[in-house]
Length: 391
Image 1 (cartoon, rainbow, N blue to C red):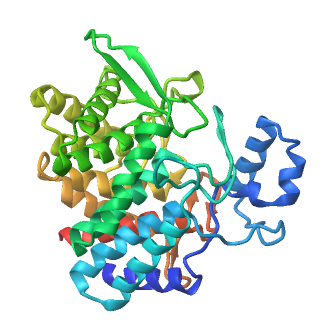
Image 2: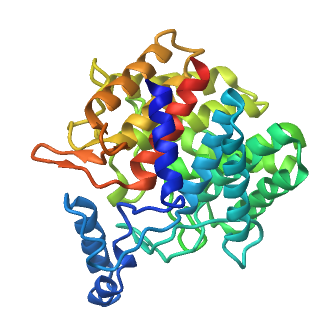
């Protein structure tokens, strides 16, 4: 059943030219953007209103389907994984097409390859205009290029991934701080070149890519930067094993999928760095995993968005849950089975079998059925291809 579902998703992606709507693309409406008067809280109001509306007003407001670079990068990586298993030529062709598109649509003016979103984005802390690259987008995309290099052994793919490290090292802001337990200066990488915000998942995604490139290049600059930024986030684990999303007062929440991002990055960093204190690293990692496992999941595989509330039920949580549990299969002999349970819950409860896409969210009062591309459909495709490749 899963492979049939994956084939249906693939057809839906190609039928729209790999373009779609996004929960956060409200500011792509010229009309709504003018109404914000270039003010922070009006931009947030527009974005959140569009995200929360169960009715898709985008066609009426002039918001077209667009190619989201992060979605394209995730698709390229997932297509590559599916190609390895099925040997379908169309999957290989799509992988190369999407990677070529990403090379042509990098954000110009930075030290290396880097990518942003195809819409303006206002958070509670910072504003990132359309096209300004973020470390989250850039690292997910760079990892797809690195996967392509290991598959095809073509140096141009490695060059792109290595270039993305130059963006991280030279264009992101770093904020140094004394560790609570060490005299060394640790630091965090900013989310983008236009802010100095600490988001732990973003900081670790930067460290993860640096560590992955270091694992075969043995470049000491990559090693030192990955270690120091990782140690900063390790030092900020809460006593219950959780991590807040970030450091600012508006970022003190703890949620499911960002916690999953942190844990997956830590697993990958540990695998790629010659860490000098693996027992301590592993102890912190497993404490975080136990918190994640007991806090964000019901026994049937239904996700919880926040640690203190169930709603909204969001398929991004499900997708990241599948990925996270699969990464802990060597630590937990129940992890793969639970990843399968999460997938089954998502398919049984949030898949539209007539229209062949996943719903976005379910609240107490309604289900948001808008067919968003990146969130959750590309993410679920990415997660399910990962699960399928391991079972």
